[in-house]
Length: 173
Image (cartoon, rainbow, N blue to C red; front, side, top):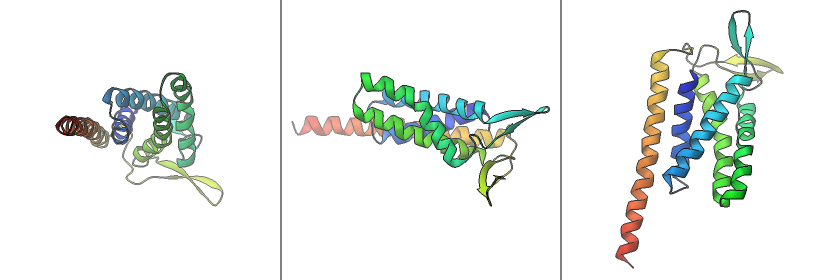
């Protein structure tokens, strides 16, 4: 998938999951956005190499366990900054986002022609499900739409519970 597709999909997924734990949408969107862009860039930059005139994925970042590690590694500077600025819950949510962002990248890449790497009989083998081209407009469009839908659901979820909590609290106070 294209990098911007990874950005939008991961942003939507992380925002949706964070909205279940946080009530401030600004915090949700900032943390999710920073982690989405940073981790997806790291995974693609370190996980691709030029072979002749083609760019190829490598198992350095395009395996499920390693994608989790790279996602967590990209959150370290954010966690350190939050340690001095914010409550513990935001640090834990940032770490959770780091665990999720790598597999979300692999989820999209498994549908492309070259897929991701899995270990079989001690060797790295490619595994793909649908074999779409990385720049297939339909596949990229569907992933972007899914990301936007999850982002809108996060906005609705936070607004819905804030609204009802506010009215419940004022009614019984």
